[in-house]
Amino acid sequence: MTALSPLLKQATPVVATHGEGVNLYDAEGRRHLDFTAGIGVTSTGHCHPKVVEAAQAQVGKLIHGQYTTIMHEPLQRLTERLGEVLPAGLNSLFFANSGSEAAEAALRLARQATGRPNMVVFQGGFHGRTVAAASLTTSGTKFKAGFSPLMPGVVVSPFPNPTHYRAYGFDEEQATDFALRELDLVLQTQSAPADTAAFLVEPVLGEGGYVPGNRRFFEGLRQRADEHGILLILDEVQTGFGRTGEFWGQDHFGVSPDIMMFAKGIASGFPISGIAASEELMAKARPGSQGGTYGANAVACAAAAATLEVIQEEGLVDNAAARGAQLRAGLERIGEQHPQVAGVTGLGLMLAVEFVDADGEPDGATSAAVQQEAARRGLLLLNNGMYGQNVRLIPALVVTEAEVDEALGLWEETLAAVLG
Image (cartoon, rainbow, N blue to C red; front, top):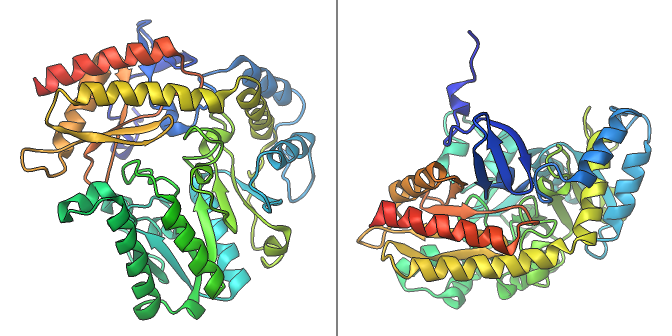
């Protein structure tokens, strides 16, 4: 009998038969409240009627049209739709399939455009699992252990993470001072500006714990990038398409990237990703250096265009902000009852609850126990954080006020059962 690799074993053994909105149903007909959204992918919920209709219609017309060989109408429509929401100045697109591929495409463009070898990444960032993307990842050793040597030319600088630096007595301002000063030290001692192609950073750390950056930090990155001719790459794979209560995570901080990565929430579950840059910058890539067989698949493009329409028509960015505020308030209220809860981090519908032990140290074991108990009660959640100390809540952007209240009720029961 053939089985899945044990490496793919699910933390929550739910075998879903179908889904609708934020609900998943198993073979016994039990409903599970899905606050994972496929790791932030099903932005319009499971099987949104408009996305389903667009994909079904496209399957009957053209499934695969390799876009470096031919152009197809769904890709043209998606490009036009993205043009309406992309940050100013990013008017050229390259499409791939996954976030890891977007990271590699951004890396390739940055090195070719600048002629420089090195990348500066930030502590706690996650950018993927392929060799290059894992080399850029610092949110945990599990993403890169056991298949060294990795790609050279990567230097790590601190991220202004108050949840980590509170052990040193740092607040956000002090953590930001430290991060920017250490970045200057990196450029002085490890990667000379003339050897540095790009800074690569997430607006909100994803696997690293749903820790947002801040305006002064990103202004500091932009200033240093401009001063030294370094490119600024923002990884919006998890923060894009309304997840944080703004269309892009960067919108909270007023920062403008040179290259932006996107994936996950763009197509409600269909695999598509990409990078955006200016035409001038994109033209500096060597001809034929970027490509891929399945990038910009016609069905995925149709689903993505429909997703963007749903996000706009149903006001899902505003809903993410409102429901995120509701969810955060409930999580904070419930957390006040338990000393093991250190706090709530994140933005919009990208929230995490951090657990600590009696000494105030990150507590991954309790986080895992809470996630498992919630699943038994019908609330599907995920863990994150550099020590696995967080439980994250990322429902689809269509989540309703009543569904948030239901999730909070299950959460309160879960914490009572696990923490007492």
